[in-house]
Image (cartoon, rainbow, N blue to C red):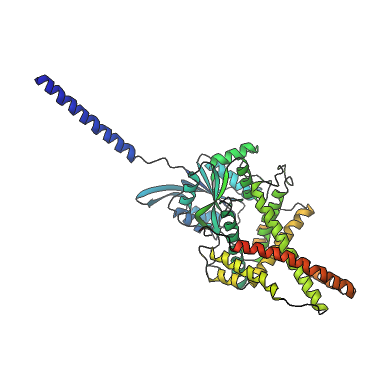
Length: 481
């Protein structure tokens, strides 16, 4: 009897010990940190002495530090290397009681004929062991939670190959009337583009190199599918657009973030803006019309290019309607045949309301954005500037003359080159030729031109106005750009 009781107590003790050990094991497992994907940050930098310090400070102040940061300096002639070197080495930051660690490396690869593409591919070899690659331009400053938001979004769905931040431009430090006008125009342009992509299921046609995160697995798949040894290639002047297209073709999604934000460097001179926009437009046309460089396959109806076609068609219609209106107005006034109708006030009113809707969609809008939209004339002048870029890019493409638009942009940013004046000269010559020809025509021919021209313009303008009203009343689903 005694032995049985003793045996019973021993079994009870053993069970208690087993329970205690199990509890300790479960507690130790629960205390273990979940696997955290690794992020390798890559910053290609060319003459970024004015901004590289702010970029690195922004990254080191993130709520989620990248695991490693590589600054790849190429072809620089300023103090970019010296300034970036001040940040080289290990850095720690405590967020919510958890210590995070990162290390900054600065690489000066000297003269590099492949420019930004060469710097990107050099950097890829340094971070390809990570789960994600965070690409950051040398003049882009992100909001403190941008990396955390991008990581959460891309990790939430294995189908996502890359996510772009919501881009805008910080206009606070901008001084001078023309620079402020150009920045306001670029802010509106970014806002309209970002909202357009958000309302398309947040499908992003271009994962901008300014601040985007990529799945390294998706980059490798794109390289394999296109028989490339590197993610970025020289076959396009818009390397980010081409890579985005390839990632999409590899079966991955390309998205724009719903929350992560970053301010990019804007162009404060007409010369610099012209060079940048012509390069972007020219590169987009090459993707729409593949095979112009290298041996890129033709995919004119690729999902990432449909928006490009729409943008170019829209710009063409804008150019036609504006030129027709000015020409017909002058012709009508010259023979005292112009009759004002209040109905012509509808398109500009619709344009003002649409511009105000775009301004209202900006998360960090200010009085300059509202004034830019409300006055109409600033937005209209900026549209004429954009039309010049559009026509210059198409002229360059159709001429089949090989030009280095990267070098042209760098030259423009240094204050050299007068290519931005070409649209003004061409417009003046066209006006002179049209006026001269008009006064050589008989009164009957002039009347016939006006009789046919105004109705055609009215129909096109009517369709444009309906399109603007459609965008005006389109639900933004709570998105802010």
